[in-house]
Image (cartoon, rainbow, N blue to C red; front, top):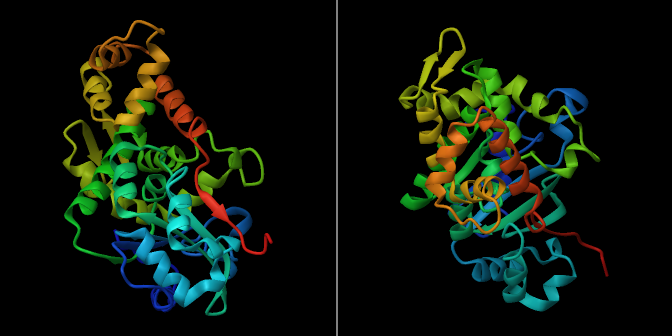
Length: 312
């Protein structure tokens, strides 16, 4: 998943990483400060804030060490100590952000998430917050040999492809697929209506198609339900009820639950497999999946703990 990004960025990112405790299971940089985007931010990537996520096995210990090294990064919550910070981190999507942090001449923000919480989101899409970030190209800075985490990262990519297939027609382009995938984590996101460029998904995908291909080409080539015409940039998928049922059964647990709650009337309590079979035969199957993802994103708790400095 490590991909080439903006020129000379690898050294820059690792210099940033050197300021933090090194007990990380995964660290990655993402966003317009890493990958070029079209639109309003085009041409300004070198000045954009750098965004990072750090996954840690022991949040309390990591925050304790980071408070010793970087106490100024934290808001007033630093007075409550690492245990309380870790408790706050557990709410919402389970990620605690420090923002507006000056580092090596750039402004950065970084989120801290426990390895177990990250794995849960990757496998089950509990909030689709960090899992959604990792469905798009990111710059991996460090990753340990946690086999469960590695398997969850791959599972998340496969789930993104499966969900996108269900919302696409029988034949489509690679760019169509990557637009659908990149849009998963923005479905129901108020930032797409207020405060952010509504063309953000297109601006992310168009200049970065080669990076999406590096993430997904092996998955597409190995998928038995798709004909991947790589040289033409086209794909064809099985839209039969049997094919769609197999895809629905492969979706993450939280999304399956949202689909069943949309389709099954209150009080019936039918088996999940029975409901998904019904959806597979529905001509509006793709719309049902889209609505379920929208519900998953809008009905969750606040998507992350975002604590700024200087409140008190």
